[in-house]
Image: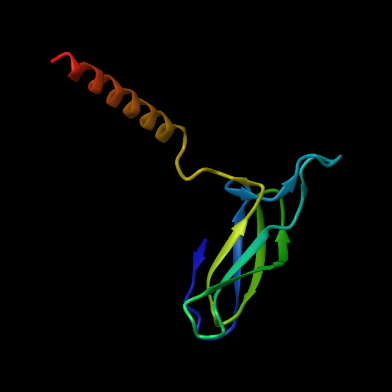
Length: 118
């Protein structure tokens, strides 16, 4: 998700590394055929209320190779957030964080059981 504060309509150009986020059809015959990203624009309501409207748009793909995909995304002056969704995304926290969370949970359980015996 990308937060923006535009004063007018504009275009966001972004380069997406395939190793971090990609959008492909792994079930296709050629294995990994590119498919469009899902682009969601979050916009302030035109009525002036605090309501939010969402709109799915298509990005213009300006360049692609084995490492990157470049997108141009048009937005209005009411847009405050842009979400780019693919079929593959590297988790924000890797396997070390999952291991740390698991060990912490085990520690809490053991500590609570040990405390009962004191």
